[in-house]
Amino acid sequence: MALSIYNTLTRDLVPFKPLTPGEARMYVCGMTVYDLCHLGHARVMVAFDVVQRWLRASGLKVTYVRNITDIDDKIIARALENGESIRTLTDRMIAEMHADADALGIERPAAEPRAMDYVPQMLDLISRLQDKGLAYQSGNGDVNYAVRGFANYGALSGKSLDELRAGERVAVAGGKDDPLDFVLWKSAKPQEPAEAKWESPYGVGRPGWHIECSAMSCALLGEQFDIHGGGADLQFPHHENEIAQTEGVTGKPMAQVWMHNGFVRVDNEKMSKSLGNFFTIREVLKSFDAETVRFFIIRAHYRSALNYSDAHLRDAKGALKRLYTALASVPNLPAIDSDMSTPIDWAANDYTQAFKAAMDEDFGTPGAIAVLFDLAAHINKTGDVAFAQWLRQLGGVLGLLQTDPQQFLQGGQDEASSGGLDIEALIAERAAAKAAKNFARADQIRQELLAVGVVLKDSPTGTTWERA
Image (cartoon, rainbow, N blue to C red):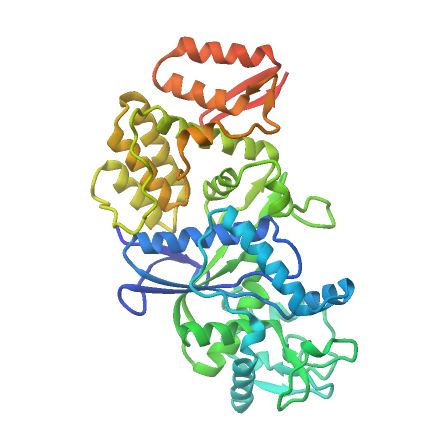
């Protein structure tokens, strides 16, 4: 089975056919670096880390670009609020972003372009748009994109111009010809620092947000590339505007496939600072280890909504421990080979074939993880060293199961500990005992936990617990 990807633009699953055989070029919209990364950022970073890992595991040479927005209204406001330069703020936040990404096992992209370094390319694109009649300068000095001049505007969001106009809430102001028009170049404001101002044919100013990604993707991947990704919140207007800008200049499809990961919800509500349910990666890692957080994200399909709660994280931790328990049960398991560059023989056995089939259907991580649990069950029954190595190798494709099993299982206790017992470790041991048909030990563990006020609840998807 060949890889198929859900294309947001065409709204269907399409076979992936790279523009250059044997290569894959991918651009993902990254972070605006004015604060610590939150769970939504973790979702997009992990989702597309898995994508690029699978492309490489499929034998493709991957060029992965994830940009950094280091000039933006929020960045300027935060720098002024802190009394520091924009560069000092963004350098610090980029370092914090890398710390969070490294903790989550996210491999660095091939390139992380910073918007400030590509202003000349942005001005070139704006000039070319102006030459084609798609950009105009308003009376206040801003340069805007003439949306109605681009015939395919709205294709990505699936809305007509009239529908978009009906839904827009911004009155025509600042010399815009149409409320749908968006800014390409912002004229400088007196309160803005000098480092946020560039000379241009349109006067002193700075680029708009959307033109940044068009310029960086074209500069690093060319006018056409294979995959453009980002969070679902970017589908409109950011990605819609990127298409209008880039294709307005080139007249060619910008990306072959558009991918968008789903939203993060907290206890079934949209994550929002205003609702008080907004969590940074750093906050979550105070309560749960990074591999558990990564596993929690990966076991949901990237396009589905991801519902965050402590209960779901505890469940993810227990599930991950079951996989590590299977590895730990194998005597004389060889040391981990961290070199994942050796090609995997996907026809090697039923498990590798099933794993590949799941991942080839739009990066189906839930199905792939189900294969890992099938492998773990087989290992618990047989103690087969070869299949334990397969479990670790397939887990490695997803960035999982690369810690020494005993080290992971003996890791520090968290809020899931009680009465000197590591609840999650005992749940994992009980699952292994049940798989090995050692029901006496499984019942004994249930009673041990009940004695300290922990009630286990079994379901087809695993075991959760609550306090009595």
